[in-house]
Amino acid sequence: MAIITISRGSFSNGKEIAEKVAETLGYQCVSREVLLEASQFFQVSEKKLLKTLHDAPGFLERLTRGREKYIAYIRAALLEHIKGDNYVYHGHAGHLLIPEITNALKVRIIADMDERVALLRQRQKMSKNHALAVIREEDRHRTEWTRYLYRVDIEDPRLYDIIVYLGTMTIEDASKIICNAARCKSFKTTLEDKKKFINLALQSHIRASLQNLCEASVTSLDGFVHVKVPAQKLTRTGYATPQMGKQLKETIQSDLTREINEIVRKIPGVKGVVCDIEPPFFV
Image (cartoon, rainbow, N blue to C red; front, side, top):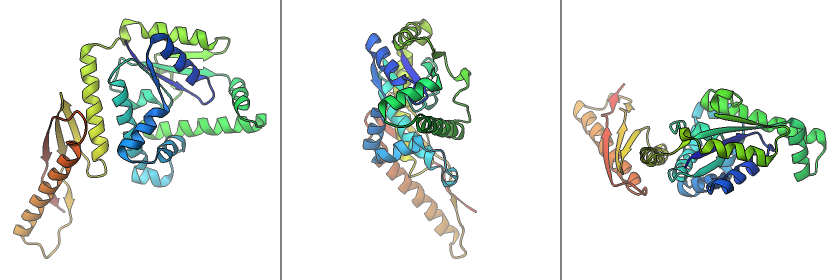
């Protein structure tokens, strides 16, 4: 049993290949469902998540790191899916969202531009030049946000275990190659792997849930969670006495511990929470 991620340019038959692979292996196939689940659990507009994945990063987002926040939601939803193993995920750079899962089979589908243009025109009525412009713009967006978020080139062959070129090859042929690779020992999921996936999924879910409250590192083992929050900076005023400053620090630690517990204990799979809040400091 394995986890397969399929990366592809738009209109490259990646969806069809992913579905064929899943059907052949008896796996579940997911893509847009991950966005929907992330949207529902984290109460974020699905349209906003989709826009985040589609649009090239703007100047304001580079300053506010808004895109990373939404990617964290999607990553958490994806890990919830694949912790059960036997999944094919296609689209949205899945192989980059889950770098810790080293035994995932990472596939890249490549198709000629003429074939991609023909497929787009088959689905939507438009001129050849318009279709070409649409695909090139989509490719540009994907390349830019991949470089922005992960500091890699999505076309780099070192990111993939298999690159499938749909030249003379059919969808059926490509699916067979991927299925055969998925059956190799290198991509088998062990019991230890499954435990790791469950812990990763829970950690990711907690980080995504806490990111609007504070920056935190999260570890988990069998449902028992450790949340560590680094010291926060406080601005010193001339009116605060040392005693008032001490009370303020204690209040911040206490309130933050309470809020973290309220959020984390609601997440499915959490059995216990330990908070390690470093004392704030004045600057």
